[in-house]
Image (cartoon, one colour):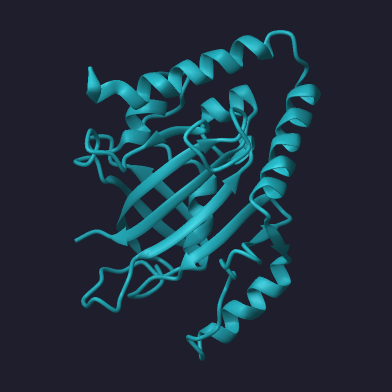
Length: 236
């Protein structure tokens, strides 16, 4: 039974939200989602920086590795807001290795925490909906194939080794088997995907706040945002 613990928790949360949505209009659901995002930003004391500022820092970092993309100190806790999609991203570690090049397809291994901001607008146990960072799911290092199509990224899960696919893509309602939420693909333009070769090197580590329209089909159906804390490593 332990094997399905988090999947059951996730489905229970989704069905609970779906029940509430029976009497809500889409506008009401969307307003609720926006309120949860605003509450999260306040609760976590997030300082939002512009996409222009973030891009400027990223360009400088290509020549000067000491440049910080998003300040993660307690007094700043910066996230960049991408205005075109409403996604917020914090880069805790840019990662080692190299970027996924144009025309390249590579396997990416992911460890993640999924926090449902519709349950509680904070990074905490009450909002934790799914994770493969547990003993139960330690063997499921989510694997996805990512392709850089001239700067636009696409991805699909290896359904034989993916908790996300097993939880959200197991039926027609939850989408096509192996589909990666588009919000998960945003970091690949900005972080390196490699494998550490020394103690001084680290895998990429990001947090992304994903509105419903860029999340799982379950999030889209129930209109809620999720915060993902994830590490990204190149497969062998």
